[in-house]
Length: 342
Image (cartoon, rainbow, N blue to C red; front, side, top):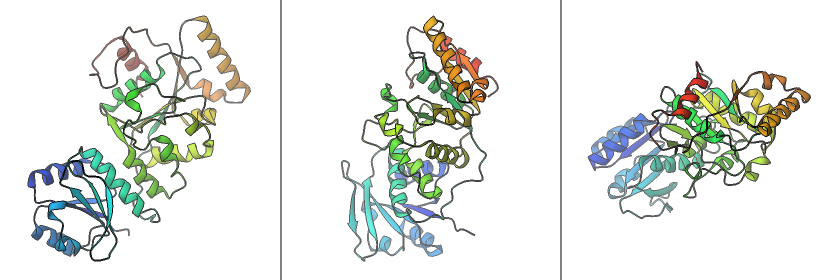
């Protein structure tokens, strides 16, 4: 029987420890059980029961007592804003200490912790991968027609569904045009995540969780800056990727905003439980859809055509920002109708 991994957060600033501890305890699918200590006595009692896999300690509290906890990894929260992440050798010669910024958004701190843990666990396949979870429904959104609100449709659908379930949105656009979906701070993106696809499932899962961001309740992985970063990835690796995400990460829905530049696009569409094919009313759009459906039949993907739902979103004068309040409007109401009993 695999033992539970434990992260201990130690900070004598009770307000910070309480808020950060509450955030961590509210997060799903973390690779550790969480314990919060606000005094050296609490820390000693907690670590006497078992040594933590990761000790996260405020810089002002770090010292000989924390070095004696036997933690596999120790992360020091830098008390001084503007500090830079760095590695330092422990005074006892055991392992490596890591420093991260303390005064930043809680989700950023968690991403740092997951990245550090993934680096340490790269050869360890014993972490829980959550494979007992119910499999997510895979929803594909794809069209050969341009400027038909595909990304807007995909994201708004995700936000509508996220009001009742956990939803992940993934953009496969060749050059994503939405600034909100591209990482602006040098953070890892979808192409970086695919680099770890051949890692053990548990390690891949930790890498995945360290890259997830949230916008208006919808989880997403920042889009690749260039479609060429994704276009060389084999179809089989996409299959492994999507199966892992759908089976192990606790989502109810995974929405794929697809592009024809992805290798094996028809095979990926075949994996989907539902497909939305967006179009417009003009003759050129109709001809493109006819040709697309002909090609599906020619390459023996008629099942993809048959389970696709053709949608022609209404024209809107202002496309809503993804961070806007989602209340109503013609486009939102249209998408709600298309979702139906999904």
